[in-house]
Amino acid sequence: MVAGPDGQRADLDLVTLVVAGADPPPSATPEQSAILRLCTAPLSVAELSAYLNLPFSVVTVLLTEMLTAELVQARAPIVRQATLPDRSLLEAVMHGLQRL
Amino acid sequence: MDFKGSDTIPGPRTEDHLPQTAQAAVKIVIVGGFGVGKTTMVGSVSEIRPLTTEETMTQAGIGVDDNYGSDTKTATTVAMDFGRISITDQLVLYLFGTPGQERFWFLWNGLFEGALGAVVLIDTRRLEVSFDVIGRLEERGVPFVVAVNSFPDAPRYPIDDLRTALDLSKEIPIVECDARRRASSRDVLMTLMHFLHSLATAKANA
Image (cartoon, rainbow over all chains, first blue to last red; front, side, top):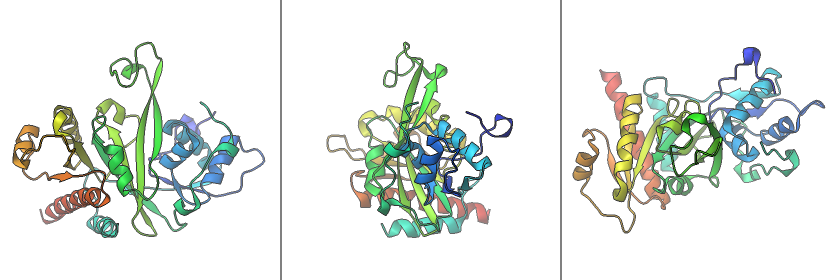
C-alpha cells in the first residue's frame, strides 16, 4: 500500500465529503472499487470508514492514493480555524436544526 | 484488516444518500464518559441510523484503561459513533460521540480542532468523569456547553450547584436534557449554536 507523494496522507477530515470522479478502472483494487461504488453520491470519510469497516487512518491512506489518481474528488469541510465560526454559517445551522 | 471485498459491503440506503449538491460539512463533538448517553443523543437527532468509525490504537494507550484492553494486547480498537443532519442542500452537520479520555481524541485527526464546538454530556451520578474533559476542552480552546442527561434515578441538582461543582464560569451554558428525545437533544445543539453565535458576536464587536 502506497501513500501519496513523500508518503504523506492527504489532509482529510472525518467530515471531508468524497465523491467518485470516475468509474473503477480495470486496475482498481477491491477497496478502491468499493469506495467508488459507495461515493457515487457525496459521502464523508467517516461514513466510508463505517461502511467499509476499516479504521479511519486506513481509509485516509486509500483515499490519498485515489485523490492522486483522480479517481475521487474531495469537498473540504468548513473548519473552525483557531477562531470562531462565521456567524452566517452558525445561523444556517440553527435554521436547519429548527426544522428538525 | 478484515476487508471482505466490495460485493459484501452494504452502502447507504438510497434514502440516506446526500444530494449531489452537498458541498461542505461541519461537525459537533459530543463528549462524555462511558454510558452517559452520547450514542443515544446522536441517534435521537440523526437522520441516518448511527454509524461507527473505528481507529486502532497501539502501544502508548495499552493497558491503561480497563474498558478498552489489557496489556496482553498489542493493539486495541476505539470506536466512535456518529450521525448526520442535513442542514441545506449544500451543508451537512455531523455529530460525533467520543469517549472522554483525551488520548483517544488524537486517533481522529482534527476531531476537535475542526469542530464548531462541543457538548459535554454528563451524568450527575458520575460527575467526576467530566472534570478532566472540561479541563481539556478549555485548554484546547474548544467552545462547549454542558448538557445534563436526566436519568430517572440520577440525583437532581440545581444548575448553580452543578456550575460550582464543575468549576464552570457563568458564561458557559448548562442545560438539562433527555438524550432519548429528539426535541430535547435538538435543543442542546441549539444552545451550543446560540452560545457560539454570542461568542462570535462579542468577538466581532470587540
